[in-house]
Image (cartoon, rainbow, N blue to C red; front, top):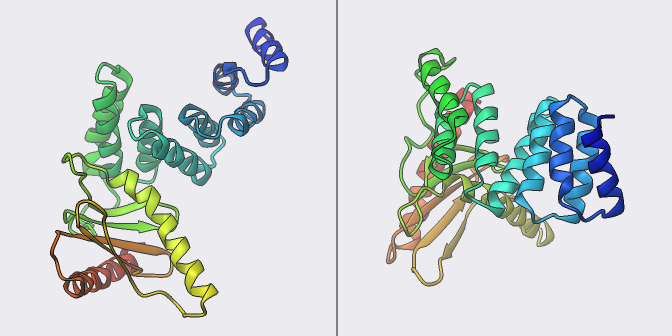
Length: 257
């Protein structure tokens, strides 16, 4: 065991709440000691469940272990806690690139660069994604929602398939909202089971303050669609628009997923 690792291990044993676990876990990861790195990262996460950097560390270790789904979950939580977390954005970009989703990878990298514009590794990664732009497995695959504004198609784990949502300040909040939508899907399913109402078909709500409307619909059992409506939009009309978009999304999912 190197002197640095020994020193950090001793400090962590003396003070289990020390944030040195972040550095220790990363050093172990870089040295390929992934089992030890994961143990350190997850022990730290138990003590600091609301610390984005702890989730980011778990994501990096899980990714190195080839556990992409677990890494995705960790980075999604980190991004939920801090939408401007460059490490989580970089990690999600890597997973998207590995899956061949170059559009999503580029979007994540550009978001990360907006946070840390002087990071040369991010610029190199973005250039790599752009250079691979002509090598997609499905070059002619359309977007499920034609990237329509104010609507999102998300799976049960918060993975964004398509669409775009902008916040009140005009910024893109698609990924952050997608991570939260999965919870809506779970709660809707739970409530309908408790009340024995059968499968849920749709859920409409009015957003406090702005008066905007939100309608959720499940194109399939494992996905959910969000469509936003302007204040004053009739609920029935928004529901019909959502049903049409859900049907389009269902056809897209059957063909490409």
